[in-house]
Structures are given as structure tokens and as C-alpha cells.
Image 1: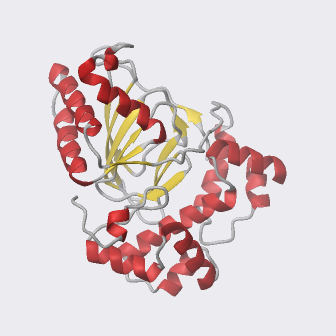
Image 2: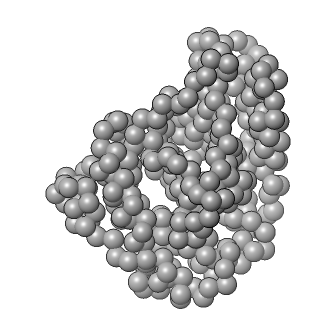
Amino acid sequence: MPIVFEKIPQETAQSFHCERVHGPDFGTPWHFHPELELTLVRRSQGHRMVGDRIAPLTPGDLVLVGSNLPHVWHQDKTRDVSPQAVDALVIQFAPDFLGAEFWQRPELRGVGDLLTRAARGLHVKGATRGAVVRLMEHVFATTGVERLIGLLQILACLAASRELAAVASVRFRPVLERADQERMERVCRYIDTRLAEPVMRDACAAEAHLSAGAFSRFFRTRTGMTLPAYVSELRIGRACHLLEHTDERITDIVFLCGFGHVANFNLCFRRQLGLTPREYRQRVRLLGGSLDLPGDLNRERLAGRRVAG
């Protein structure tokens, strides 16, 4: 996917940016920016990619993205193309928006540590998620000093929590360039619209106007993963959504998600989630919510214990 630089709007009347995303999609490509970003998804049927990890989007999904960490929230238009398909709250702020040494003050060192940990992205879970959601709604309902205090309360809540899970892997080291946006947007669109079909490297390379070998290097340096791994994670994410929200037979889901063979689907699914598709469907319906995808597995849920939130 394209990793492009995004310029965050900066208004003279506020020191950080708040935005409600409401429409048919999230409106951004695979991008990065120096500002940290806290995104609450209230409605979407799609997936998010933070660094080298992909996960399905469900209402209540809450992630803090660190400075210059590539990310994208993607609405799957094969599921919902309505003008109200996406509803999300986004807060973006520079690491030093209150001064370069502000987070080094004794009372705020925990928040400073939080901002450092966010370099890999942090998925917010459990009771913390509920508390932060309420605080975010308050921030969006206020202005001025009260809004600023609200953001500090959010950061303090996150800094004190043990319900944060790193998203991107420790090995993720992207190549951040502002060029190549159009080239990779073509590849992204090509893959997204053909997940139910074979996705061939040569065809993707042709979309990018590169040789097969050059495309493989190009794709890996910008996403942190190979093309097959990326396609497989997207397909597993789509399969999880179908297992959670439909009564489609597993054999039908195999072909709807482009795996071709039941045995290959089961192998990939178990390798990424540690469960068979049937076990996943049973667990998620028993627990009444989504299980997390690779790199962010909720071990307590997989062990059969209900987690708050």
C-alpha cells in the first residue's frame, strides 16, 4: 500500500486536531505523519493496517498510533457503500504540542513513556476502552481549555492502563517516502477488488509498472511484509468478518475469500489465529464480540475467560 506523508490541519485556535470522519470511507491512503493519532471507530466494515499488522474493524475499535508509524483504516466497499458506512472520531497531536520538555515533568513521565510505546501502535481494550471512549466524546463536545484538559485526561488514563497491546511487530522498519503514491494506490485498489480471485505478483507488478523482482522489493520495504503475506492477512480478516456476522458455510467462505482449497484455508487460519475457523466462530459467538488478529491476540479470551469490554 502507498506510504505517503499527510499534512495534519493546524488551526490557530487549537493546539491539536479533532475530526469526525463520517461518510462512505475513511478518505486516506496508507500514510504517516509526525503527529500521534487516536482513532475510535464507531461504525465500519473493513480493516485497519498499522505497521505490518492487519485487523478487522468493529464498532469500538480504539488504537493509538505513534509518530511516523504508517497506517490506514479501510472501508470494505464490497460490504457497505452507503454514505454512512463509516463513523469515527480522530484526535491528532504533535509529540511536543505542549512544549518539548512537557512530558518530562515528574507528574507526566508516565504519559511520556506512553508516547514512546505508541511507536508500534497500541490497541486499547477492556475497561480502559470504555473510559477513553467516554472521554473522547466529551472532548468532541467541548472547546478551549476544557478540550485540552480532556485530552490530558485521555493520555493519563492510557498511561495508567495495563489493557494496551502493541500492534506492529518489533521488526517493522518501513521506508517512508512521499513519492510513489499513485503507483501503490493502483496496486492497493487492484488487490482489494480481487481478494476472491488469485492475486498474482506479475499482475500487481504490472499495475505498479515495475518488474516482478523490483515490485517485490518495493512492496516489502513499504509495507514490512511480502505480497502473499499481505494478501493472506486481508483474506483472513474478511473470513473473520464472515464467520462473525453471517451464517455462510465455512466451505463457501473459503471461496468468497479467495483461498481456493479448504485445507489451505484451515492451515492459514490456524497458523495466524491458533484456532480452526469453526472454533473461531464458536468462541466469538460465545463471547459476544470479536477475537483479535495476529500480533494482538487476546490470550485471556482464547483461554476461555471473559474480558471486560
